[in-house]
Amino acid sequence: MVSYDSEVTYQLRDLNDWRFPGTSLAVLGFPVRHSISPAMHNAAIADLAAKDSQFSEWRYFRFEVEPEKLPQALPQFFEKGFFGLNLTVPHKEIAFGLITSIDSAAVEIGAVNTLKRGPDGYYGYNTDGYGLSKGIEEDLSASLAGSDIAILGAGGAARAAAVQALQSDCQSLCIVNRSADRLENLLGSLQPIAREKCIPVKGFSAQDTSLEFADHTLIINATSLGLNSSDPLPIPEDRLPQTAALYDMIYNPRTTKLMKTVSDRGGRSANGLSMLVYQGLRALEIWSDRKIDPRNMKQAASSALASKA
Ligand code: NDP
Image (tube, protein in one colour):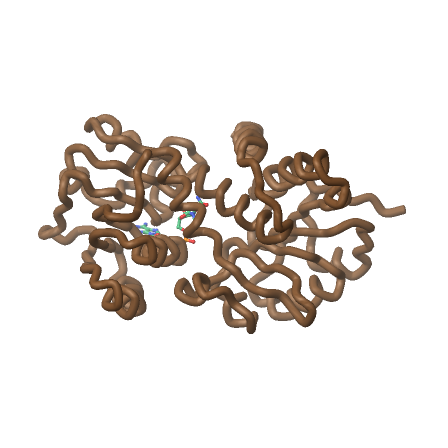
């Protein structure tokens, strides 16, 4: 009898004789060893199962899948009966091109992070924007709606944040990025929704001397600067508004240099753990069709992170 362990990082070859008797869910990424999603989801599933026995055989696993193998991997997960999948770096954009049925919010973002099994294949969603919005509400008592927003970065996470900000009717949106081509590309793809909603959208390079934010600007760091303690700030300190509110999508380390700088200047800052929790919570709600209590997920995410420190 094969045993299945949600602490293990499985490989694609492990799918060949996958016979987990319950309902399998998984996160796919490359690398994925660091992912705390299994701990977070299995805690929430245990809570669900305590109230409803139909969830007692649900289990969430972790699979390392190389990006070039994703096109062959998704049909294999489907064939092996996986009910739900989460996609993390670098699969969100790749999977978007492989899935035919996609939720309208994910279409705007051009990336999917959650797949749910349908009769003929997976249906794609993106729950990152929901996670960001809930995280900002909870940790900063702020709202994307009606705010002047500055997003640092123009990668996948920045794109999800920008679409969410526009869909939430922010007051204005400013995007700051190192490379001009990625910035232009993002600005161009946001134009239709910005025009429809009459929301001004501007772009700047991080070193642009004309870069200036109003005092109440809500800053979202969606660059990977801050993952390492030696990283420079994503924008020069003198560009930061005096009393900024900062949501840094990075959650490991728990306090980035940018968060500390903003706090030292009298602003408020929060890390991205709540975004991670709420994007996962929304995915589990989509799969289970149940309302999920965030408390167990938060607790499990914090413990899993602490054990990795
Ligand atoms: P991408 O690789 O798609 O984008 C990375 C971004 O960081 C780009 O804008 C890139 O700029 C910028 N960047 C990277 N290195 C540098 C550097 N040395 N100097 C200046 N800019 C730099 O990554 P993602 O968008 O997927 O993720 C971005 C961050 O968000 C990561 O830290 C990730 O962990 C976090 N994240 C958190 C989530 C959560 O749930 N809390 C969810 C998703 C992401 P350029 O275009 O110039 O290369």
